[in-house]
Image (cartoon, rainbow, N blue to C red; front, top):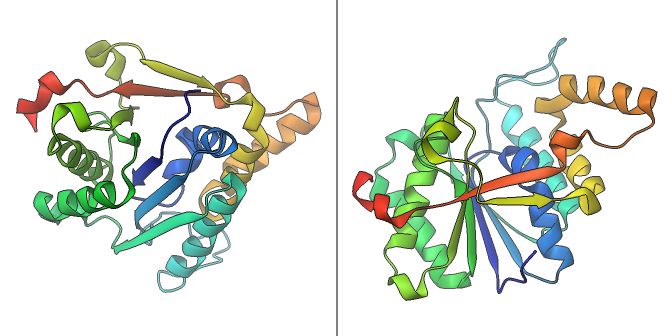
Length: 227
């Protein structure tokens, strides 16, 4: 993995980082690269409240905040920014407001790499709004001074339109950190992890192969006119 000057990760929800990029983030940190994670909401509209319930709509934000902090600790992230927006409202925030927020972070941190969702291919309205804002913020800079932009995509049949991933990171060396990030978000991952941990114990293995490769697409700036 290339040594970066600074990595900025921008996602809308706690746990967005855990599934797709926590190994990449941990790898950059092990390489000595500063990593900033800007999480736009606290995921307070998350569907899982437990069965029997362990949370209410009123208590879930604080639970998810603590989970986010635990995930950052598991990855080694020391610069966690909680940006204070409300879950499931980002699609209604003016694009310019979110773009300004991301642009201010880029100006402050001067990252050589930004990671976020691929607009048009990330399913959830909050994901889409975040991806659009990140693309627009990076695009404000002259082409010669833009940081690299690596995007996460997972919509149905997205590869038919945007092709295979441009970047694939083998994160097996930091699988423990990735598993720690997944376990940190227990309110949202408890059911999946119960089955996963049972399988790992039975087979005496670590994380399954599909967890150990993180995939990214570089944003094609000739698509600028679509945003």
